[in-house]
Image (cartoon, rainbow, N blue to C red; front, side, top):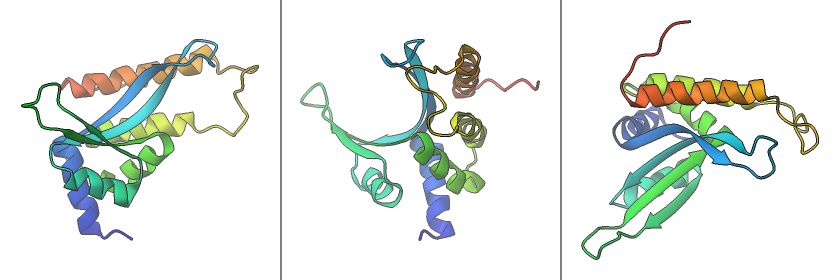
Length: 152
């Protein structure tokens, strides 16, 4: 069990080095050939912090070698979908700069939570739902670019 200080430290890592995003991916099994997924990731040249995140929160850990011999390797930790939602809910009280992004990401993922079997290969997700996911993805991009969200 992580202590509050560990969660606050983790929030600082996400505020400084992390990325919260809603990614659009091609999906051959989808009627509309694309889908949206929530992702949180951290990339650093030192392995210690990405490894610590992986050990405490799960997700993926991978190493990217530099394109040139002079480039240092980068260690990437990534967590996605429901696991990312849970992670963001844990650190949300401690986030400063990325709090609006985390709140939007949590809202996005909660909207994707439907009972298993609701959408299948024969029963597609309605285009309206997919478009709503796209709207949230665009709002998150606006936050990345430093724009304020408009109130509805």
